[in-house]
Image 1 (cartoon, helix red, strand yellow):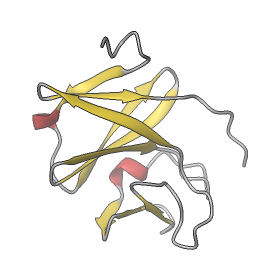
Image 2 (tube, helix red, strand yellow):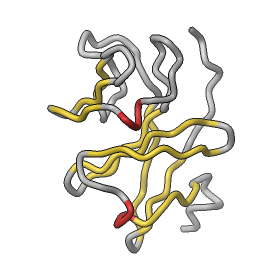
Image 3 (cartoon, one colour):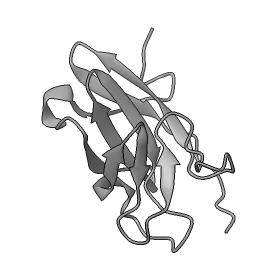
Image 4 (cartoon, one colour):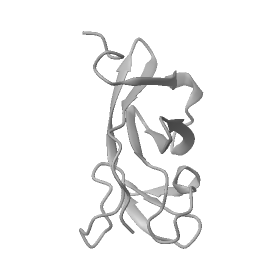
Length: 112
């Protein structure tokens, strides 16, 4: 299996990610927030739908959620949804191969 041919993009070595912290990437004009929580890697759209700020990567992590530092909106790291269950952020598939993190971003048209 060739991850690049399957639409994945190499982002970084897993050692570059701090636990319970985020890092910002841009993949084909899409803002991506990458998080490491213990041994799990999560990738979400980095733009908060509330005020369209690209700050999700810098959010506070707690109870499987990230809170946008700009205005306090909270999103589930696995689903991207808000606690109410309503749509929040797009989530992206990640793969960890030999210590390297890959992400598959499927661009979507943003609707505010």
